[in-house]
Length: 246
Image (cartoon, rainbow, N blue to C red; front, side, top):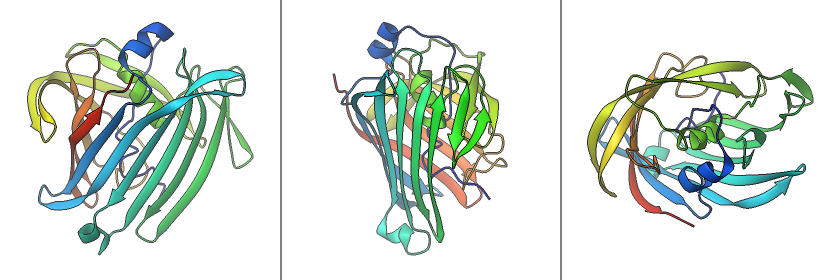
């Protein structure tokens, strides 16, 4: 069974077309750091997850953002299911097209290390020396999440994403559901609830599960809450602290 990482899914999502000035103001700010607590069945502390915009770089001639996502299990949760995942993403600052996706997953007895290179001009992805044809402006799962945060959307909208994990290329849909007020350790926020439609999802978030996110209903679209029903039980992620960056 393929895997994607315990919180790498905290990010499945989205793209259309966006200007770089708009993206920098809303979705991607260097220095932003989001820290989440993870709970299993809403009772047991499962661990923590960190999403960080680490910096700007030049990669294969493209000006890119570099983001880091780390999720790790708590000591109690590790006693029966150990998790330490790290994923680094590099994507074009203007188009959000992925350039590189590197993952190192440790989940129970499972281990997976992979590096995927994307060439948006030739519309291909390369993984383990295998070349896959991709759709226009393809993104990896985490880059798509940052892209989602740059978009304007309303309840009832459905957003379509071109995504590739280096093994297959496909379109993912995200439903914009409704507005709700949410309270988490980081505070109380007016949010928009969304649901990605999971198809052939890897890891513990397999396709039989459902997943919901609550993003702040402002220009930041900051994620504050995630709930999912997955194969090992219900997982909840709540925002504990955040650094806005800039």
